[in-house]
Each structure stands twice: as structure tokens, then as C-alpha cells.
Amino acid sequence: PSQDLDRTIHDALLVMKDHNSDNNNTNDNNALIVPAFERQPPPDCTTDAKCAEYLQRNSSFLPHSFEDLQHCVLEDQDCIVFQSQNNWDGHSTTNSKDWIQKKWFEDENDEDDNNGHRGRSLFRKVPCFHTSRYEPY
Image 1 (tube, rainbow, N blue to C red):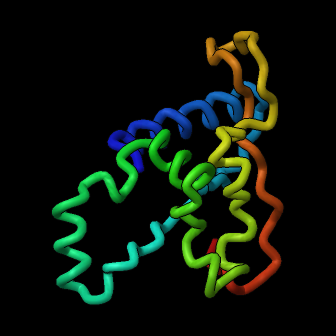
Image 2: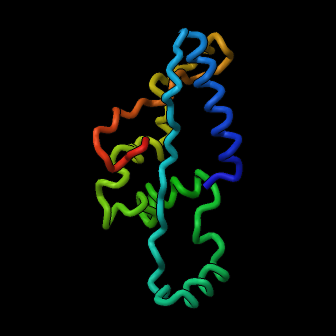
Image 3: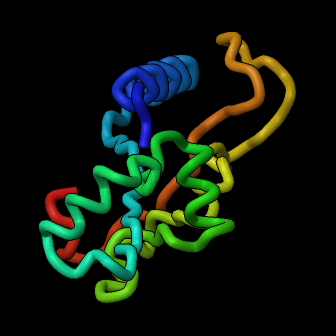
């Protein structure tokens, strides 16, 4: 969950563009992957109506921030990678375990790069997909 995911993605794409131009890289085949998670339903959520009623009474059931999501995934273990129980290969290349621990960059450091971006360099790379499941990606 993110109230400003659009701004975060915009800023990330600018960093990628700056890095590519600084290194004379003309490859425009970049993608930004945002992992998907789902919340396990509560025991009394047996019908759509009961689920709706439960959500009205418990607005904090769904995480509202990254920290809430981290807590739900890592501590409570009530949030899981989307469809991981019935489509185990679906998000296997996303590396959600690193993502939820904020391991987003290839090189974590405390120095400024040439563009004033502190503590990070490039986003982690995902190996090329060799399956028709991800077409046209």
C-alpha cells in the first residue's frame, strides 16, 4: 500500500533515466516491478456481506502503509505474496522477500552518487524472462 506510489515510480524512473544517460546506455527496455500481496481472510469472513461488515468494523485489517504491510507479512504472517498458495510460480521472480525488507537496490551505500542520490545506485535486476507466461514483457 502506498498513498504516493505514482510519485515514487515517477522518481524511480527519473533515477533510471539519469543513470542510463550518464553511462551512455540507450537501452529503453526497462521495467519497474511492484510486488503484489494479499491479506488472509479473517475466520468470520464467510460471505461477501460478512466480509464487508468486517471491513467496516476493522478498517485497519488492510495495511495502510509500507510499515503496516511489513508487519503483516513479517510478524503477523497474515499477508502473503499474491496467489502464493494456489499459483506458487506466479510471482516467483519478483523476489518479494527482499523487497519487503527494503532491499531494492543493487548497491546499498552511504555516499552520494554524481546526481545527488544518497544510499542507492541501481534497482535490483531481474533475470530475463524465458517463458511465454510473461509475454509481452
